[in-house]
Length: 111
Image 1: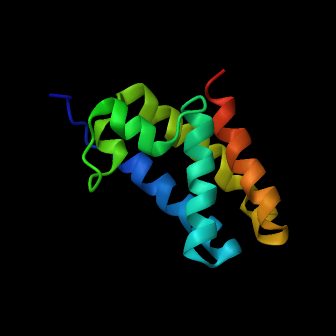
Image 2: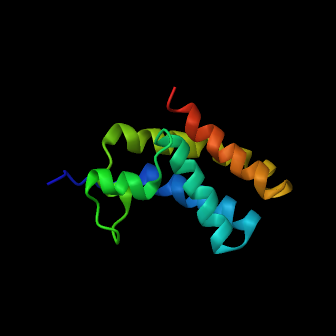
């Protein structure tokens, strides 16, 4: 059975702030989910959120973050922190640019 981690307040706060920025820009659930999914895909090296859940044995109804190793949670938090300061860019540009920024910041923490 996998060890269950509880994401700390830093990840919850950065996720909340990033979610607010993305949702303010795109305004609909489908686009919001697509951008977040692309960020996870970049962070996990080309593996989707669902594939990662499957690899770690995470129940579909549970959040993936509760099962990630601490270093991955910190990487995700760091990627969020890189993305959020560019919120002014996301608010002023098309969805594609906002998506590219999320993907870029999540890929950056892998290297």
